Image (cartoon, rainbow, N blue to C red; front, side, top):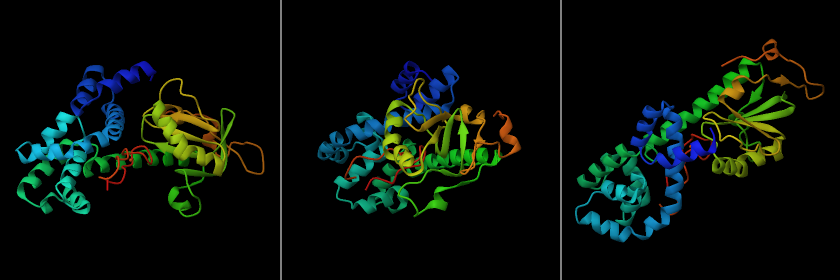
Length: 294
């Protein structure tokens, strides 16, 4: 996707309704649009978190005068669940109890809060527990898709679970033997059930990808929902989207020898994640939900 198109979509996808409207009008994948919408919402929430926090005494006063938290959240164009968590905290409810109320509204301190929390949960597809689970599921689907591709091509690998405790940071797939593609040797592959815009690419490089190259050498990252055209591949890291990986012709390399086709299928291509600002859901693996704000 070219940068102009991406920026237009990013600026337009303000609400859930915008996702549905634009998907229908422009015949675009609604899940891709929701991923872009999530970028916008989480970054704006992080940027304005303390601005909203400073207004909490006034906002709680409005609530005591009869306004709902959802109305206030919409006025401020702030994620409903995050607004609710902050306002309940301002009411003196312990933060553990606050999050418990959003997990189990029936445990709310009173009937009004319970009804309002239920409304906030229904209105927030990003920061609600249900929204976070959907993002985790998106991340799991990406990892499963990568696993199927590796297994289809007979490429041995170890997962994060296999490597837990052995390294400070671990990719989704650490290859048992390197593969070569377009002249680059790949020792690991990371799955991102996300769209790689410039902000996301810089963040992922700093937090995950650069450490992987220091630990394991060159590798690749797959952005299953694509990335902006012209994005520069960081040194030692190959950028792939869904189409690129599905049509790639990987060549297995014995660590003690030259590249060779280690499996008949490698000879030809086959088609086709409140006291501080919130972490963006999907920050760990592009689609995995972040932990709830404290």
